[in-house]
Length: 354
Ligand code: COI
Image 1 (cartoon, rainbow, N blue to C red):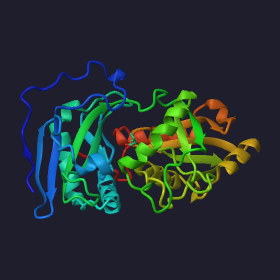
Image 2: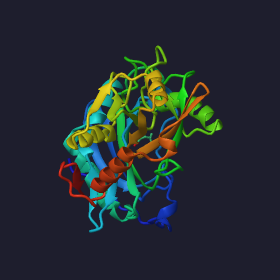
Image 3: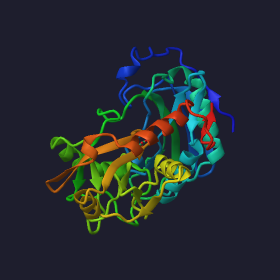
Image 4: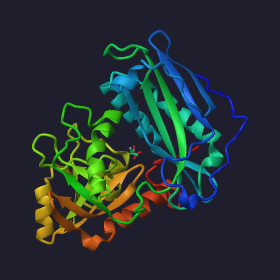
């Protein structure tokens, strides 16, 4: 399939300062769109000027949330090259989410090619300062104008881009996390391991209450017993206990993060023991009491590596590593961002040039 390109005739002004970008507030000049119908399959891939979508008010996605999304970043190297980090993993994960949401699969190689073509068009929007990147948001929406509950017959696959800096206002400093024991995000057999809007809608109330209590995010516990640790909505989580790195096993209700996967592979390649297993919040608190909880951190595309400085579980607060960024979190951050931005040689073959 050939991607047609219609360039904007009125390019926007680029952000004046890269230091104040924040996350997801500014959008580039163009977007990628491709349509799907049962008869034609995926067709008409095109890059067009960025702008509003025209949707019938009865459109399936608006009512029943049949949609999936991805998040990845393009980085500018010191040599002015543009790199993508493991884009094929995002395209593979789209199909995992698609399968659960009854959305037809996309061709992974074509998806990566579309990303590259799009980022090539938006090249000048990729920021260069440390900690910045062009955040890419591919997503698919169900577009049938019909109020019956059923999988749509038509879809749009869209990619938009946003020059971004840190996701959390804390930047790379430790965040305070509220351990959620009232609301739940997902259960096995549900949609928790798919990257779909419903999971984020389910998180809003808890996040609002946590923020009212001056916490940055919530740590979700399993939806049945509210005992075992799952994830932080925008991040997967890691705990370092007595030198062992532990992260909750993927058991169907947790998002299989690409940064999570990369951190596991990286730490193992450095000879560290990384265990994917069930870990309860009680175990973390017990380890803290015994002086064995060395550090905790979250991993995600938007958040990168985010140290966790404090947990509050039902009013019982623990401060981790003196609210300082731990050694493993710092070194992992340096290596992952070094690889992503081309500052470190990519011995893993994780980056792709645009
Ligand atoms: C990401 O890290 O890319 C995410 O999708 C998390 C969040 C911004 C929703």
